[in-house]
Image (cartoon, protein in one colour):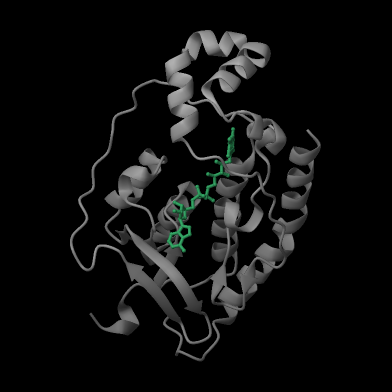
Length: 242
Ligand SMILES: Cc1cc2nc3c(=O)[nH]c(=O)nc-3n(C[C@H](O)[C@H](O)[C@H](O)COP(=O)(O)OP(=O)(O)OC[C@H]3O[C@@H](n4cnc5c(N)ncnc54)[C@H](O)[C@@H]3O)c2cc1C
């Protein structure tokens, strides 16, 4: 196809819920979207959004493709292909109606859970009702097998670089989960960006030369950084205070 008539290509790094929704939003505006996701498909939790993204003809998803560096000015990206060119099968589990539980505690408390006896004793003291539901074996297995991670807050400004890149979702504003709004904010990022791309009439068929600037896109991204920052900082602070 003549490049001038073909859809413009957007690259999304990360096939989490925000990356998938953003891909769907851009594809609906007429862009061709490539999603690069470092993990294998089955490790992802947002199956419905991912399934939806995969079903859109102008979205292509590359699993086990970890992006290691990007030169935005030169439009060059380094990707580590862990499959070495092999096809990646795509499957989905059905929802099994189970619950997940997350334990939040200071590091000093986690450090005390260093033996099965200490762990069971700690749960009997603090969460006896949960221990009854989970069971001693299940609790020790799950605590031993699941990752332990610090909670982090990310605050940044601006969120964009010229007309070349924008960060959305947790990459831009990871927040502690005590307000239950982290993902909601990421989905709202996509909605705001969608509105601004349309408002600034960014053309999904325009192909700027390598060193040229698409001023409409640059203005849309700058407007995003300007409009979105205050809301994101506010919700992040509310979550921390909660
Ligand atoms: C305990 C807990 C409870 C929460 N509860 C809520 C809630 O009730 N409500 C709510 O709205 N939010 C909640 N959140 C927040 C929500 O989970 C996140 O905001 C959301 O998952 C962020 O989505 P994302 O797509 O931005 O990022 P992620 O889900 O982190 O996805 C990013 C993806 O990018 C991939 N990736 C990263 N680096 C690379 C790379 N270099 N190359 C290729 N791929 C890469 C990762 O593998 C990952 O799949 C909670 C979070 C936690 C931890």
